[in-house]
Image (cartoon, rainbow, N blue to C red; front, side, top):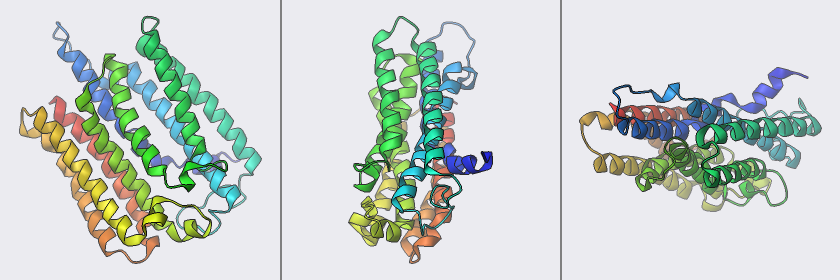
Length: 309
């Protein structure tokens, strides 16, 4: 077994994007706990086992999604002439059977960490939350696999953006906040929306880059359905929408200018809008994926820092 090939299939460069929502939800959730403490001791969010278990769980689900995507697109031939990084199944480096085994192992590992996270966060006293989060864990596994695997793969019917928004944005931010606080704050859906929209923007770039091959293999992504020009407009809306929802949250909690620190992350995002607007060759968008993904990660860190300083 070539470990390097499985590492490539895991697509480690996607991990910062996947944990962005966990960072925002954990910072805000931990800050809520600290505000309610009577002692002067303030525990940072990174000192919490809940934070690190949530990170590990999310990474597990993201790696599972990447392996399943490699497998699903590989056996369907979608990746045969793809741009960007070579895929392991389509290139023959990892057989479909071997990739299936890797997916099973990753599923078991992720669910074990998820169960430990649920127990640490809720203990035995919050059975309702425990059951709900375990079901969400199962839903995350199903969503990771069904993106490209099977006849009814939702990534082939234009629903990928919806699932990315829900799982990378709403579930990641609001869910991690609940893990810390055991309560729901409706206003958390604003920064959760920001993360979700930026995550969808990354997927949109990916689909814009691959739209020719996707169309040939009947992978009807939203980009294939919309066409190039409308997909560009959709991309602008995603990034501008993320800015608006983040600003709305800050305005509702405004105390100091430092809360707008996250605006720094939108500098490369606006540069990305310019590149997309001028783009003609889809293959040139490959480098933009990393720019938007890392900008989302930077946004998460700066947004969180700005709200607690």
